[in-house]
Amino acid sequence: MIRIEPGAGDRDVTFFRLARTLAGRPLYWSGAYLVGGALVDCGPPVTAPELTRALDGRRVDALLVTHHHEDHMGAAALLGRHRGLVPKIHASGVPRLERGFPQETYRRVAWGRPPRVHAEALGAEEAVGALRFEVIPTPGHSADHVCFFERERGWLFTGDLFLAERLRYLRDDEDLDSLITSLESVARLPLTRVFCAHRGPVRDGPAALRRKAEHLSGLRQSARELLAQGLPEREVTRRAVGPEGFLTWFSLGRFSARNFVKAVARGR
Image (tube, rainbow, N blue to C red; front, top):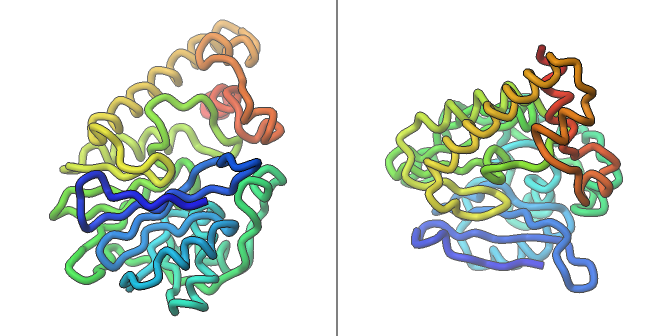
């Protein structure tokens, strides 16, 4: 499934909302942005043909990828064949795109398995037409995660750094301390707009980033205090984060509320 949406009033930004469907309903939305001639992320493998068709007649000069997860680079191989695009990603993500990376079953179900693809390393800045994207390292969600900042316009493309102000789940391989540091770092930039890869343009984006950083910092402190009291992780999760939900079951615990507490325990 694909939905094409304007960039919330920015004529140079188009958001392609992408998802695999089950019984006509989307499993989990992801997305891609066409910003001038730059495609920022390209969605999952299962929607690669739809995205490629949707880009017909549109100028695309570069493919910039925020990180190696399949819901952000999944159309890269097909776009390479049809448009001659070579994905550019953080240097540590290049071997993951070229040699492949582990995928749990839930990720293959939701997004499909991406083909391997030749990639190039991002520079400190990527110029695409009149746009200048500063490459901001933002590890936490993944070690190779970056955001793209167009300083003249104040636009920040956040990949999976934002997602929501209040997260209910954390991946078991995410680094909570690095995630908070990355959020605090980009929140200090002179931002006007924030564009999330899954949710689209973020309302009141600069302030939303600050609120998320503050929320995660508070959650971390609460978990530390409860763990220091000797409470078990399950009870700390219930008090500091909240109950588990569908994604915990669907991912067999790879996404869970308890992973917040495990991350705090690792960092103590």
